[in-house]
Image (tube, rainbow, N blue to C red; front, side):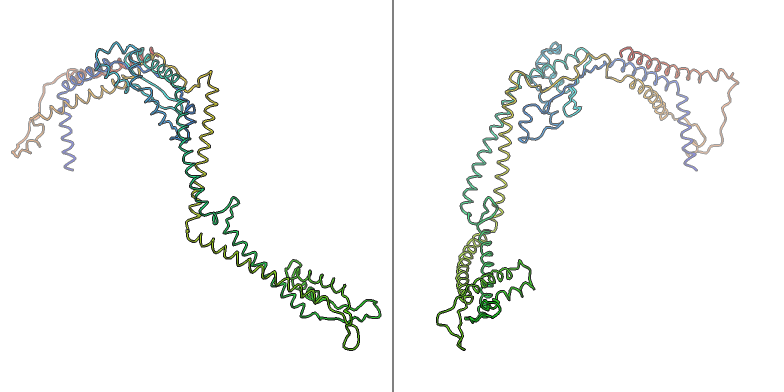
Length: 511
């Protein structure tokens, strides 16, 4: 295709142009590589001193303040540690205790050094309680002194402030306790007024209110009244079936007066065939049957009583007893009705109070929940204050350790920056790229024509072309330019290899 042939022709032109200017390309490559390697060699070494610090996150005042503020986490602890270590007073104290003070000649120098230390000292969290403190400097001894002095300043400040921290925590607890006490007093006062206002409808300690008791009492009284009515109905049926008098004649074979079976006992037999022994009707009829049998066994003859046919008759005491039971049941029913009326009126009154404020129970529940939360928080604070007092008494003769230097700093022997191997390796392709770029740039200024097609592209008629005829030159003379270029390029690579071996040897010797 046309565009492919054009691309190939353009590429061939650029390659030929670069080859014609190969010595310029090689010279620029050498200059860039030598200059870059010289700059890399002049970059000062950076030495880093590190120390690992363990901060006890469970020491005072953290457990005492637990629940009063946000819980500690690694990032929060890192922020607190940075603010403590890198505060301006600590940094000024650090400068005065190290050789950095020799570099301070004016207040502006001090400001720049404080700002540089605040940025240069790195604090990195490793775990929740473990932190690494690092500092880089061109002088290994100075880097070590900065980290060691910073640790000393921090430890001294923590030991000095240990008891002040406990006192601050105690004051914070006292303030919180006083606040909760005031809230509890207010809540108890409001609750007492609320209970006094709605005493009738609020539940007691057992969870029952007077309204619930009134409803239950009305239901129980109505059930008792229903039982009394059933017993009265049963007794009236028994009285209707019981004769007022009975005959006093005795059968010849028994020697005892003939006493008929009481009606309640007859009904009991019929009820037992239908219901269980615990049925209220069966229980009532059983008691009535027993009473009627006792009365029938102890009846007495009425003086002067005679049957219509001239025989003796006696009054039926069972009928008399049934009449007395009916009177008692009527009195009991009347009493129950009066009690039901009284309890119903009381229930309606309490129910009207409850309906007048439908959100009453919700307000009562919220009040109890808020009071319980306040009281539980207050008791927790009291317990923490007591624990703090015990801890302070136990630490009277020994300071509680809040931090520990796990890995002390050491004087660094091997520089951590710059990475000269990577830098000199990057300079070599950069120099080659600069040389090729210079060749391409010079090619853009070349106005000569290399092919017939370039001439024809101008619109001029081209008759033909004459090939370059060169004299016979020996092969070794024709290869000398290419060999010289290759040797120069190989010398550049050899120089890079020598620099690389030198750096590796220095690194191994330092280790």
